[in-house]
Image 1 (tube, one colour):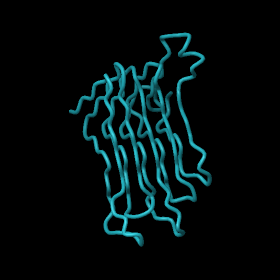
Image 2 (cartoon, rainbow, N blue to C red):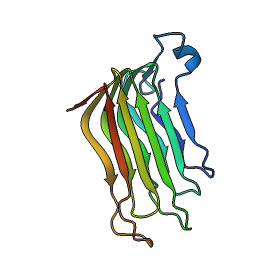
Image 3 (cartoon, helix red, strand yellow):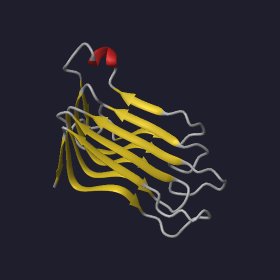
Image 4 (tube, rainbow, N blue to C red):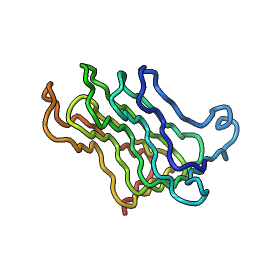
Length: 178
């Protein structure tokens, strides 16, 4: 897949979840299914993956899963966000959250910056993320891994400060931090 960025579940007006995965009709029959992720030139790093990106505080929470289990993954990415809250708070009373999950069990994701559970402002629009590195999968992180990162300051009207959460589950896989 030669594109510069991927959004798996962005801001929306309904709470219908987004889902990206290998087709089980193929992975159940063939063991060599694979996906290669590069920039649009076919060789470089993709700019970003955004799994559950609550971009601007719409009226519904963003729920997204990218489950690449069952196939071989070969990805070069600059920054991956799994569960990124909006950059502004809603004007109403909605409490929208970006719930993101990224799972894979074979191959390598080579990423410079990994953000799992990213909250940009104090208040309603929270980022919650889960990253599952299973089986023989390898996660190579070249710069930083941040779990439950909070960039905001202060509290909102409900006195909510940092509500971000980030979970890294390693179930047989390998995580290398450089």
